[in-house]
Length: 463
Image 1: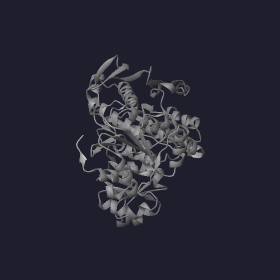
Image 2: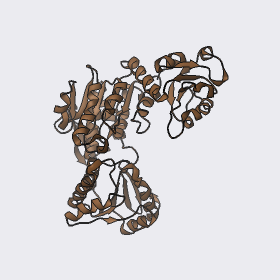
Image 3: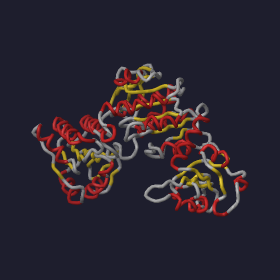
Image 4: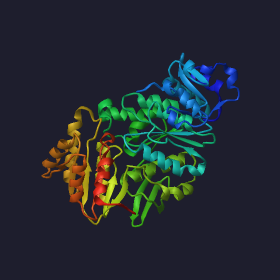
């Protein structure tokens, strides 16, 4: 956010600027300018507005600490200024004011700072990272610092963009119908991207059709001069939303295929005109996201050769395919989240990647799949049963569902607990050259089990 006087911020947020417990009036704010926003007093930066959000704790309790840490003012509920040792902006509800301010900033900065809004069942954060790298030749890019994709994270991303930002990348998530459209409306995006439509968050969205409606509603928030990018298999449905749509994937407007695996080289088709170049990405889902990123970059006017030059720098975020080696065993930490589509992709990647030893899966529960969660786990158990995986360990509350599916194919998975006893059992079964996939929903924190296994295998080795 460009530096803005507190009086302007108060107006845009729908609030009233007051002097706080120290007394005074708007005169005290002369010359003070806000440059960002925070909801956590522990990470406040100089010039931030601190929004006193009520959660497990009342943010008002931390407003004065935020001021002392460098916040320019605290945004508090009506009557809350008396508890703030510094400048305050009183609003009806700080959470709503955060979104209101972000939306107002984007309306003013839409043309000067074009935004890319990204949603999808999987791959959102990874695509944010790819785009931040590929678009850097256009100037400074700003992306979410983590999975900031809800009604707090989206406005914090918007308001956290420093002055001089040339491209803004925004991630949008959802758990219930209507969330994507509401959040996307704040972004004033020039480009909207749907990374994938797959079974995820079914407890809130109800069905795969519900997921599709929710994700594609992103397109409804785009302006007439904006462009949507979607997987090629959803292009027809996307065009029904009445916005210009382009597609990525096999046969789409932007497609990336693997040209060689040693060394890894890829070929960009469609918009790329048949260019072949080096890459550090070889998995199928990575190539799909790279096709989307290159397509979005082209839409925003990035030079194709400048983007291609940066492709070797791309990598996935932590816990999304991160590889560590201990005792000659490769541990693949793909356990930031899990859904049927994501688990399917992870199994495919394990099957396709070369290894001198065995392929082993340590699989945990997939959450938020609603009333059909048992059926989804059994189906993925059957997929494991058909796979080229040599061994399966299952953990968490869904482990028996996986085993039921495996047994239908004449196989089984060994059930273990995510404790030191379970870690020791898995470690003792491994030998140098093995490659082990860890995949589960975030709630399982499966990286903890991986760390225990690593402790039994030995010190980390350089890859």
